[in-house]
Image (cartoon, rainbow, N blue to C red; front, side, top):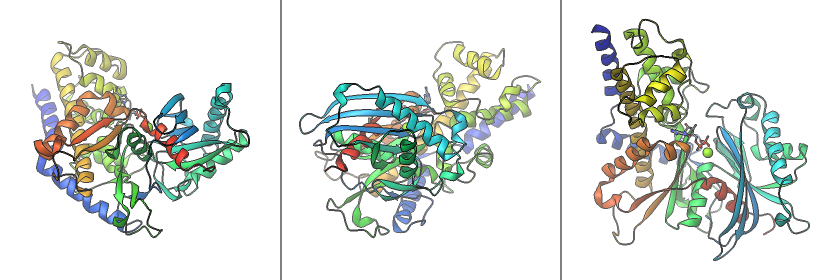
Amino acid sequence: DGKWAKAMEILKEFDEKCATPIAKLKQVADAMVVEMHAGLASEGGSKLKMLVSYVDNLPTGDEKGLFYALDLGGTNFRVLRVQLGGTDTGLVSQEFAEVSIPPSLMTGTSDALFDYIAAELAKFVAEEGQEHELPPGKKRELGFTFSFPVLQMSIASGTLVRWTKGFSISDTVGQDVVSELTKAMERQGVGMIVSALVNDTVGTLAGGRYTNKDVVAAVILGTGTNAAYVERAQAIPKWHGALPRSGEMVINMEWGNFRSSHLPLTDYDNSLDAESLNPGEQVFEKVISGMYLGEVVRRVLLRMAEEAAFFGDIVPPKLKIPFILRTPEMSAMHHDTSPDLKVVGNKLKDILEISTTSLKTRRVIVELCNIVATRGARLAAAGILAILKKIGRDTLKDVDTQKTVIAMDGGLYEHYTEYSKCLENTMAELLGDEVSKTIVIEHANDGSGIGAALLAASHSQYL
Ligand code: ADP
Ligand code: MG
């Protein structure tokens, strides 16, 4: 009938606006390469901050001793303890604890957030056994993975540029996050030294390199998204320090903030952005990462409900609540293989309180999830292509020896199979058969924590 036709028209229009043909992805990649150059040329030269990480040496395998890591970057934070055995021994043991962050702390005060974290750290240390004794006179050393844009002054200090991913605590912005953490640890009575401050992408790159020498970049696809890669120090005009002996420097791209007229953005994306905590920022992140995919689906469904009575004459009230449809639920619906799309039906009932839906309706919802996930995954692939182009690995130099490994982490990549499959297929499409054989995407499960501990080890105060 007329209403169904109207709903299909809304879906079709959305689908067309989300299209990402290969030619468009290449334009996106080229635009990103241009921004990479601009961001490396001067501080503030681009939407891409291209932050200097102060990591000019990646782990070698010789790191040795007991080290800690603290990973703060989204919905949860982790504390980690690793025992590094040194050359030929590697990682001896690791233990971790994971704690979720109460939403109220994400928009409260800096002291409240850091006190909460330091208290959990104190608990973690208090519960450890005798086998973790440190040599007398030495303090515990910590690698702090902090996955928000930070302008670093050194390997162990940096000021917060801005919060992302739903955090909004104004009194932290412009502060040194290491000193915020250190003061909180003092208040909580845990005497630890922060030896390295790293972005999760940099941690993942370090952790990846520890297990595979061919790792040159890391990408995170989780609540948010970001990437880091190994750049030639000579290719960073804004770097005025001494050239590192390695000749290399890890760059934290902060690619979530990328934007370009080539991005296929729709009215739904524009209103999501306008109503977000950080309007105008993190535009790339808002089309590809886990925090937002489900929300885009909700917005399209709401319009179909309002303008085409897609769920009947009444617009389901729950459908009007921002972020009620989370990406894990979207992914569960997208992966529903049951003949009657039972999972889709149940999710609609449980989350949106829509009691009955026809199979036809459920099929449309799966299709909508597919459109949103496909656009995100293909744009993520375009971002990876930009890195490969920047470091000259998008063409073939030596078919026998060239191997380029990208360490990948994040709950979205790990759990949203349709998304990760699409990303990998798109990489192959963009690179062609020959080159794509030399590019490996390696899942680095929680590599960022171990990576931060490794960087704490190689930047130990006691070396
Ligand atoms: P963070 O990015 O918060 O550090 P993770 O890397 O663990 O943490 O990613 C968590 C994110 O991954 C969630 O916010 C969600 O968007 C996404 N995610 C988790 N599980 C799934 C799933 N089953 N399907 C799709 N996305 C998921
Ligand atoms: Mg994370």
